[in-house]
Image: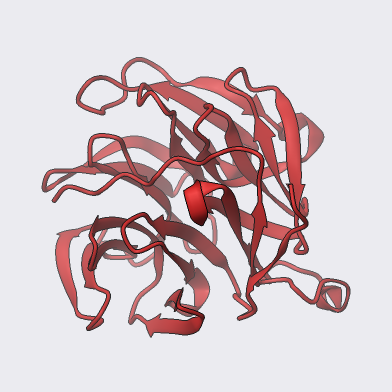
Length: 287
């Protein structure tokens, strides 16, 4: 791997949800706590402010994203900035917000919610599929690490508060089948899993909050290698760039001790490095 470098030097309070749009060859990401969607286009920084918390996205077509917010899933026109509500998401609750999410191989979209102050068990994980939102897991504290294996048979997700990542068999319609099994349990060693993404070989790359890195685990759950980062709070990786052989990593400054940024001037920035594996293109969301 080449040394990690800064892709975008705008400092995020809680950078999250990086999405490489495969038709635009463009990265989008969020600053959750500042209600912002960010991107770059031919080197020009782009920034959209929302009137609610937004946290994750999928692509609908070349010009349109699905954006997950605290009250709804939204259809977002990239050129104009226009937003249209697709379906509500916990719209009757003011104590929760959306968090990690990703499109699945069948065109659905998995999205987690959580308490605004990470209240235990206040969140859930939902699946949007062809106009319907259905709750698939409940009593989740901080949903994260949502990603899918190359063969489309397995989903991964984490509850960051429990320090564990689970794997879940999914059926031909993309719904969970059977009970989830532990994929990696970090709780005994104090590692905090955040966002994750699968590569084309089936490895799972997991950002480690407070760990200064993204760790790669094989399909068997065993640690293989890590991408070191210049920010302590790495939050989520995404594959992109030419031939999907770059890894982008968002990071955060929230939760750092006073004065910590003196020792990590790139904290909260979005990072990139060339990696020795190829990523998977993000799946299209089908409305």
